[in-house]
Length: 425
Image (cartoon, rainbow, N blue to C red; front, side):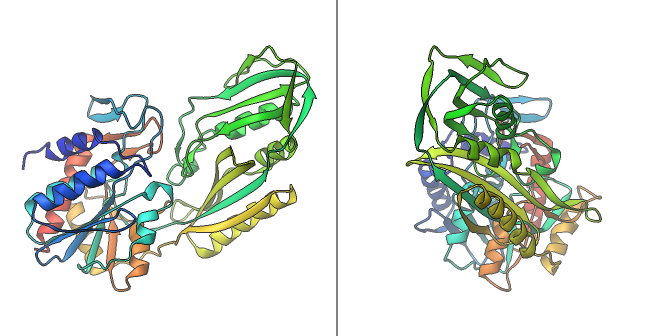
């Protein structure tokens, strides 16, 4: 295999639309590819692709959907100074690079199992619903984003939904379109400690300070992204002007039907404490956090979506309870549901092999845990005795238009993966 084959495969994947919930074309491509390499292939009702050949002792696993922000799924790739990104768009290196590595391995090895999961980015849907049995005793997930560590644990997740009626009342006042756009956004787990600005918090504060009432709103992009954009139409008794990040456009209207619960909506936005709730100084990582992901209008309701993460079950319960209590006190109907279980770190013989191979390229490599959900944690919980860990190349700012990957890191990690597989042939 040539040095750049993994990047060539990834660039080919970028030509195929595969936003979450819209993965049909990618699924067809991967099924045909697996069959062309002599693999037995099963596809379940959730779109998970389970392929195996020979007598596998290792299963590779990646998800094949991507977060689509900006111009995605139409990706215009830009390669410069050893970095690959997409113009005004997410790149899909999360987790397309893992998928590309798996394609290369499928060409090369006679004994291999591969699990391509679907719709990970919208609640680890494929992994949660997977009913198959992994044949191999060892699972290597390729969805990590730092190339100097072997991940052995991850945060669990919950979704908190707070709803209120979007009934309207007519009022007199000046009408404006107000927006906050083009913020960097980012991953609401791996990057929550970076204090990336939230478009929802910024616009909520501006509207409340200026005595505005909401007419309509569309805040945030995805459940697992720090919100980069927020747009609304508002009525205000006083003149509004653009202010820093907030853009204001006056409309030639002197009355409107405003949301009857506008005050409650803005109060919840502004009283909600966004971001890190608890930090582990010894491990230098976040324990508990919660992100206000979106506020949307749909089916006669205004719905808030909060995504909480924690390294323990107790932590998940705490962030869920606190957010539920706050929203209920403001008059919202609230529900809390589990998104994914936390995965407690455990060093195994398999993970020692993975670290040993990684250290040949990265002597400083170490075991770690991550403040984000990983599908291997779910798969391990479904199949006791399965040994698992996760590795991956350096990918920066996933789930945002600033997503980019380091090409040299990708090529290094591809060699590591092949060396690991070779030890289990």
